[in-house]
Length: 119
Image (cartoon, rainbow, N blue to C red; front, top):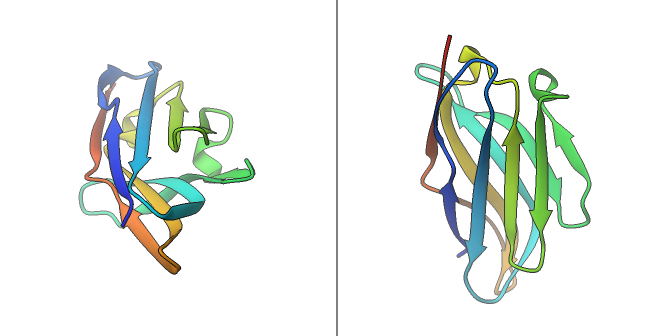
């Protein structure tokens, strides 16, 4: 499997910024894409942003213009720069990887990192 370790969550006031990181490690894997999803209390997990290995990215409509996803393929790390944060961005943010591991396509998840935005 692909091990995913997230970092960078925390508490900020509305209008502030945070940068999340997700480092992927393991052996024998090839990543197709990596994504950030989030889950607020009593809500379903939802896509925030996704980036393919080739660099193509897409965002949820509510994050366009505020969030930027990027990646460093050299060390299989991706980032989520979050600007102009709003209280409704408060959630646990999860790193996700779609990869081929030893010839098998699979999805792996990080443990999640809490983002709290106060008004």
